[in-house]
Image 1: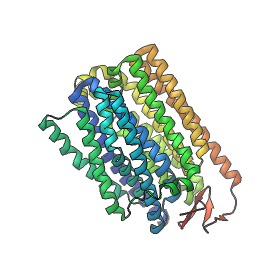
Image 2: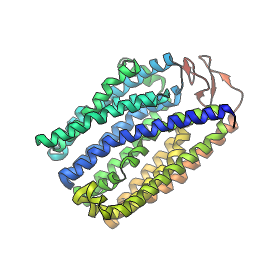
Image 3: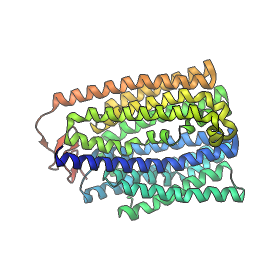
Image 4: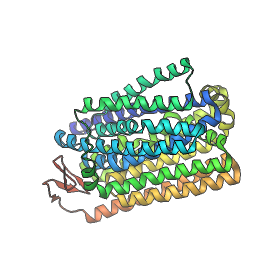
Length: 447
């Protein structure tokens, strides 16, 4: 194999290694909190926590759609001065999204009252830090600095673990303080981001960021929001149809998938930048890269599901979930198939993002979200919690077929329109909507 190929292989392996390590650390913080709440507070409080968590996921995906997704597509591998200017505006926009979403969560908490209201208020107070910290992670990976993202997430975990211990010792381990400790720990990571990047978030640059990247940002916002609106409506629907305790059981089934499931939610952290790099170096290899991502994730989901099915009755279930494990165990098999389907379509979505085929990725996301919502609620009405998860699993595999069909069409369209590189307005040659070399102009938009 040529020396250059070995260098590319080592570089790719190093980046994926940092990506896996960072996702593992990020997953640890979320997993620790979910398991701690499930074991400490019971099904009703865990259901309230679940409502707040899916709201956090909605805000997170909105922030990614407006800020970090366009950033990763257009600024992966750019020169350092270009990267810093873009990071300042991207992170400033994420901070504003966090402030707006946090205010809405606090208002919702005041209206809801009770246990769920306390969870929403704690979430609202900490959302700015949570979203800003996530934007630093994406920014570092876009520049190939996965070690910096790993350090940032390690700080989050290092602050969270003693915080949870202190709450338990002091007798304040209720849903408000647990969610607040989790979000405040993320804010510590967000605060050290400027020291790592030597960039200060620019609130004033948020409008400029949105105006220059609205063509991708708006579609990615709808794409991410569709998935999370579907998840939220599913959760609220389960509450109405089956009760809050059932919401806790369904969330517990997702929780036992542990860091693996959370890793799926953040795969764009390092997979999309790598897909952008593959497209620049060798466009014909993009499809193989996406297939490898989907196959690997689906296989990992299967392996972890088998481990759970075997080990939960032998003590792992009680260790992770306490008394919740028995009503949760029948949900493990359909949840495994659901997660496998989500993994199988992840590679296709990464390819669509690398191609900047925002219209096609949006179509796929809307279809998958609508079908998942309809099948889950129909399953819940027909067969309770087990039916709900079987409905979600079936919808996810139909979504796999649709997403891969959209990717193949996008690749054919790119091949049909491919021609010699044309100079972009800022002087960089463009290929497929992505600058083929680092410059101060990305995808025809001056920074």
